[in-house]
Length: 35
Length: 527
Image 1 (tube, rainbow over the protein chains, first blue to last red):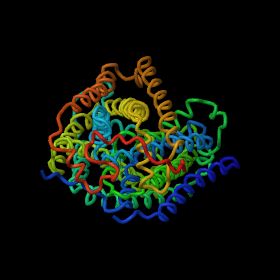
Image 2 (cartoon, helix red, strand yellow; image 1 turned 90 degrees about the vertical axis):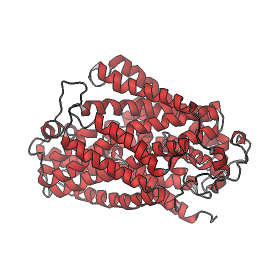
Image 3 (cartoon, rainbow over the protein chains, first blue to last red; image 1 turned 60 degrees about the vertical axis):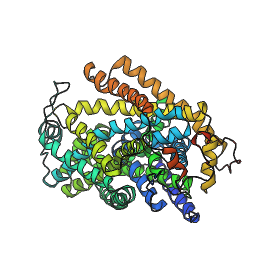
Image 4 (cartoon, chains in turn purple, green; image 1 turned 45 degrees about the vertical axis):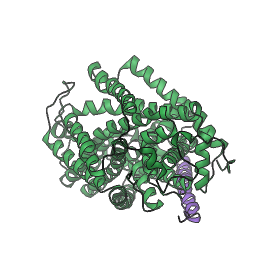
């Protein structure tokens, strides 16, 4: 793969999958209050 | 008076799974890779991310706030927001009805192709097989009722399966189906992507997909394409997420859940881009041509290009089964959510029980679907209905909904306060600007330019009679029906039902007409 394609692929994976992992971790830290 | 108790998800994880199942659909697999490639390749990531953060996720939060606060299907939620806005909810319901009746057909095609893959039934000409042998397409006729049994029977089975799941209810049916199919989809698609990455030519495909064309960023059309992809892909602002969130328990982290759903959907899309372009790279190399010459999207990608890839690669049948099974699972979970919007609306309005609603409303949807689409002219009809349902139905109702909520009724502060009262990720002024300013501008532009283009150019070279009837006509009928339904009286005491709902928010008291509590706490302001 050419360098610019590799960089953009890593950026896409880092931002979107990174965002997913971060949001899952955030949610796990905040369990819903029991009723 | 005894009111019917609203169903609830057993927990937020089931809701999140169902919301992901709804958002991840056919468009993630066959639309995103093509749109990204056509609009700047790797550079498309930038407008796409901006659209996700400034429109997709903020609108998702609006849907969640509306559904969770007002605890109803779209018409009921909008009625509880303000009585005059009920028609917006019905508009969303009928848009979902229209999408549901043709969406089922594509799921049925994919189910057939899962089996066709085993024997590579398309031979050496997948295009001819799809149009002539499978669909028996009659390119001369504009509309007809010449049925194709090879499509009708699988379509009937799809409807039986979808309605069967819906008849089991929100938790037992929708929840459990998504708990099975969403993880299965991720595993199967992950396997497919890994296999695709090891094909000869995959690197060239990835180069084509990710190499950035920075000039594209100065093109307004590229930015609009990014916002359009986010709107269509996330299932926002046309009733689905609103309906699903109406079954949540009182204390549920809405924005935290929404972030997981939004990023899951986009994460799947980029995975699909990698898988699809690796496979297209292989196809290009096998044919000795450039990747740009084999790129396609939508039905052409799935039912013509992919069968060709399957025929050319070692272990093709297994790859084909994986691909089409993924389409079936992704489409099935999305279709469940689309039809649930219509069922929940009529259940709320008429007091129908779940099973009668499935039989009457679901059955009617199935009959319409079976009459219009598994025919020799069904492909053109589907093409027109799909285009107009997306570009006018979804975009139109989303535009009207955000303008009414943000500017006519000025209820964003109330929704903001509701989100912040139950969520860990707080929203504030920035979120209000995204929802109240940026999204109406983008949606308004998309709607205006589509109206202008369709009036000037027609659609896809198809006959005007077809475009007028199934394009403009269907969308006009949707709007008229929505207004008519908003005048039909509610058959049971929905207000009493709201007051007795144990999952109703604390802040809402006594009468629905007095819920306009616009003064609220200052937001935490994370967004």
